[in-house]
Amino acid sequence: MIVLGGSSDQPQESMGAFQEFPQVEAARLFSKYAARISSLERVPFFVEKAVRSSIYSPSGVSYLDIPGELVTSSINSSQIEQPPKHQAPPKPAASRESLGEFFNLLKQSKKPLVIVGKGCSYGFAEEELKKFIEQYNLPFLATPMGKGTLDDRHPLSVGAARSTALKDADCIILLGARLNWMLHFGKPPRFDPDVKIVQIDTDTNELHNNVQSALAIQADLNTVLKQLNENETKWKYDAATQWWNLLRKKLAANKQRSD
Image (cartoon, rainbow, N blue to C red; front, top):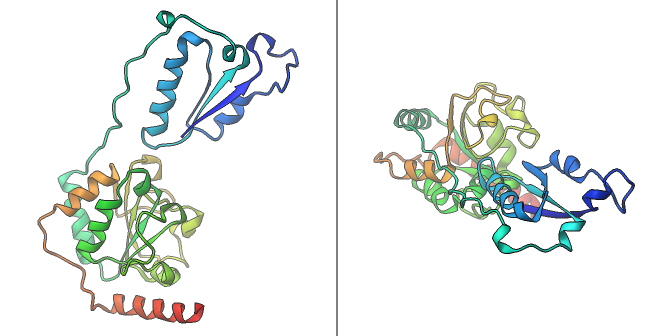
């Protein structure tokens, strides 16, 4: 997201100009990149940097401040500085070793759970995510920011049994989801103290945050999910396990209670 804001004229700074306020400094607290455009010649420079900062991982908001005198000014197009076009964001993949460890942890799990976070949405991973969930028959739920990536009415969704799923899962796969307050920081009593956490995220700041992960993969969500979906393993989580039976029973009970 790119946010554009207007501000008082630069020559009137610190003079008490109309609605004078340190907007860039204020916006910097809530954005990845915040800057005031210094001249018409450099408009493309600031726009390119704002766009690149916004879409490169971790994606976020860029704020550009436009001083009043620039709005009413003009310039010959030959004087405009044209920066090179930015490259598409890198899409790092998981290593072969990480993929092997991922499947080892998943196959050893008796009560797996996938948590879908906003990273899947930001990474446009909807299609590969759906394939992954269905190919391996895994129960999943979404964080508030991850909702919509997969339909809550999907037959493998256990969002309506969230408390049970979080508390009893022995292996939780975080797909672009953060262990913050929305997920109780990944700690007991909401989570099993011995749960194995598997993280896949583009943001290294989120890896091992609050809880030490059994496996942490820094990579593009869509790329990694595609790698997992193309794996030659024929393994699929059994739909007749005690874990699935417990989740279905809890889903039915909660649905009956809400009807």
